Image (cartoon, rainbow, N blue to C red):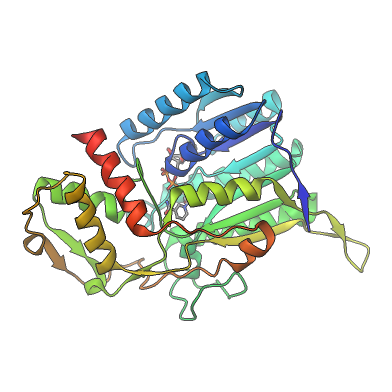
Length: 354
Ligand SMILES: NC(=O)c1ccc[n+]([C@@H]2O[C@H](COP(=O)([O-])OP(=O)(O)OC[C@H]3O[C@@H](n4cnc5c(N)ncnc54)[C@H](O)[C@@H]3O)[C@@H](O)[C@H]2O)c1
């Protein structure tokens, strides 16, 4: 059972906005809520071009002007405990969505420190703040990467996920463990969401569809890992936002166990399309949509710009979400297909860069 959370009139803290998913979520909140305050907190780091974050922030600020909801942007790191404490003391958020993190599996091989700082210390600071300033619901981003090389498909939250293949995955799994202990000890209602390869307009330039587009535009070659034998459960960003919003409105209930002790108000869900796409099909669709949007010319020689290469360390061959639990508990499962999603991306790319 879920405890209903009315977002209207409340203060909502979204960390990692104006990151990709965070910015889309905040835009949606500014549209949906009829009163209240939304706080975006982000350190605006340069893991990828910070101009994109500035651009997303400008969209948020423009939307806030038209919204009955107040928007506040705080620039800072969740690893800065004093700053997090200040934000919670000053604003007393009722709902917190923690999306701030160092993302990316491969990058964690050469840059481990930032994962420990943002994903572990940062998340711990958020939990501590929720402990001292009780919230109605803490929702946080986990990742499909926790499944590692899981052979059984589709991936279910019932599966054992104790064999991460990247430090990134280990930090995300750790978030779930930390959240469980805080739910048990301090009754902090929390829901972790394992996102599956999220893409869309103004997305992350480090992700394949985006970096491949940039390389093709420049006339460079794109590398297709594992010789194209990869499957990904791609999830369009609007579907993720819809899922997060529904989850925000339903927190795990506080209940008492048979032993008379409180049961942890804790849950974890997958959010993924549930239709894994072959990487080569995804690339073909991307090509078609880039031509359609006139990002690339009609006669572009794609074959001359592709290279099949082996699997990279930290990568997994397949991701495939079993999102039935999300559907049962929140009445929603992602449904937007790659044609529609990549079309929106290609059209945005044309308008933004060209
Ligand atoms: N996009 C995906 O496919 C995907 C898949 C699985 C999980 N996730 C998770 O979802 C969340 C959002 O991802 P995204 O794709 O929007 O990535 P993103 O990089 O666009 O957004 C993350 C934001 O967090 C900010 N940030 C990083 N460290 C911070 C810190 N210490 N303090 C404050 N801000 C900090 C960054 O500046 C960035 O704007 C992340 O937690 C990510 O790990 C994303």
